[in-house]
Image 1 (tube, protein in one colour):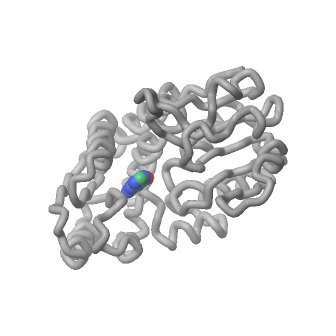
Image 2: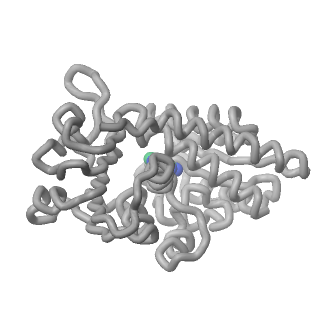
Length: 279
Ligand code: GUN
């Protein structure tokens, strides 16, 4: 069994971004990401801080907009318009979730697709669907990097994705399809989940339930990617996969922490560099 080291691979990607940023700076382009946080959700604050720290490491300038919980949708859209029009801003990220009185679809739709480094805008989702170039959602893009840099062959493999969210499950399935896997998407209404998973050469789990997937779901020598992040009753971090139960069956597996988690921010940095190079 091999543990896929997301910490190491994400560091390599951030180093690559750092070098790419220096090259851009030499050409007179300072890569710049605007990060918008509305309200004071503690988890979101931590994510946003980590994104700003990664920017600093990669020589990417970050602009931080921390708006009051009561900010109106109109005010937020106005700020997005301003950043869309600002040539010194290459990427715009609005941290989700937003307060209930703000419609997330309106907000995502307003971000220029050319600055949508999260890859959430319908134009970028459509580009992924049809095979055009665009920005891809960071977590699924990071999983493709983990697989490629761990020498996992994807072509022709049976890939099962558990979860159908717009941020992870759906783009993940499209990316695996683009890599020529045979893809099955499972979700809460799937019948015979276990039997379908048992058939997977590559099993990607984003179900949001701590240690849900055990050895009875996993084929011998499968590659297992765990997207979940939870704290168990002892405050210990765990994923959607019961690591100890499956570790002797799998060929490769991502741990939690240190697997998929660090890749999301690394791919965000990569998207900011791409946005800056396009500019
Ligand atoms: N909230 C949870 N994940 C994400 C993400 O990838 N991007 C943004 N903007 N918000 C999130």
